[in-house]
Amino acid sequence: MTIQSLLLGWLIASACGALFHLLRGDRLPRMVLYLITAWGAFFIGHFISELLDWNFMRVGTLNLFPALLATFIGLFAASILAGPQQKKKRKRKRP
Image (cartoon, rainbow, N blue to C red; front, side):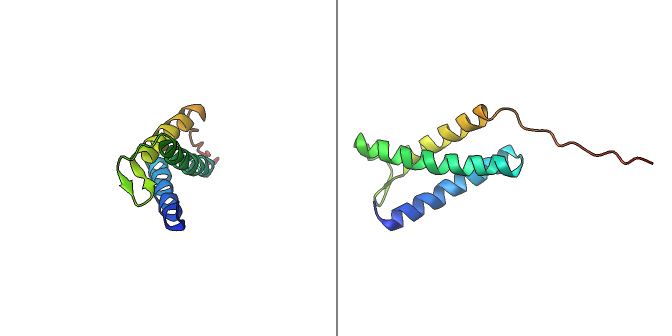
């Protein structure tokens, strides 16, 4: 795996994590969780597909489809395991 593939994978995984956070919404710690999960799951999916010699939808040396599939599975799993989203508490103005 080349440096260019690592950077492209990092960029794609970051975009997936940020998009997932945008769709789900919540606070900053949840976004950090989604980004770290996306990075880890993306490269785990890529390396597992390398071990299994599954070369579907390659972009250079990057196995894109298995990496994206692992990313979305990881993001949904992280979302479920993190629990329900916190509701914003509104402060009441006292007269």
